[in-house]
Amino acid sequence: MSAKLSFFIAGMTKVSRIFALVIAIAVLWLPMEAQAQCGNKNFDEYGVFLGVGYYNGEINPVSPFYKPKPAVGFNLRHVINDRFGVTFQAVWSELEGKDADFDNEYQKWRNASFKNQVVELSLQGEINFLPLVPGDAMRCFTPYVAAGPGLVLGSFVDEGLRFCIPFGVGVKYCPNETFTLSAEWKYRKLFSDVLDGITDDKYNLSYGETAARQRSFLGNDDCYSFIGVVLSFRPNGKGSRRCSAY
Image (cartoon, rainbow, N blue to C red; front, side):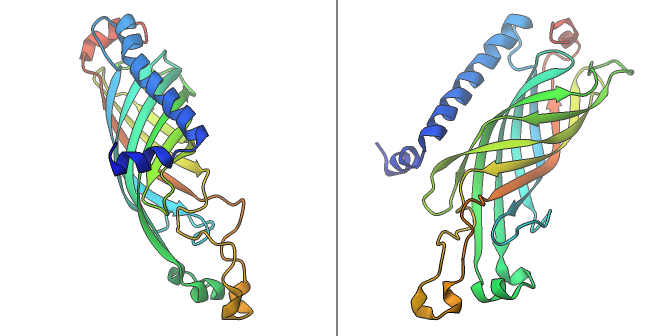
């Protein structure tokens, strides 16, 4: 077994391994389910995600859209009916943060910084607020909510693969029977506190009284968000109207 693969497996928590199995089973099941409903179709929609990602944590506790970095990925969406869908999503981005960007005196003294790449795989259930029917001018638009389990692999402090929960809101628009355009903003709750590289609870006391101040906040896990658009394509075009999902 290669060193990289050994690190990848060793870095997985028990929870991450369970959800990796769940996602793998779901990804294998979706094409079979779509084929059963729609003849020779695989996934109902193939999509490309383009947007930005940004980080929240010890360095940036609350500010949205802090140091946004390009995020790219793809979607495989299985439409169950005009109200519900299931999406497998894979996204890559780079996240960054610097204490020097903030006016807080303690952050200026701490002067921490990081830049990490992340790859996320997730399986999200989607609920449309309105019925969505491609090609129907009266039912071609809807807001929606989405949430589900995810796994994130990052270059941060030997963490390996970790569990996260993506959840957020968006809007979908189907101008015809071939394409769906979505805009979404999803927050990622990461069950780890080392995305920003700040792992020690306190500095070494040998550096003086100031150095004993809390460096990271236990129980306050890091998180990140992606905001962007998804352009999805239905391979069968007009033939998709014959699919029971629509």
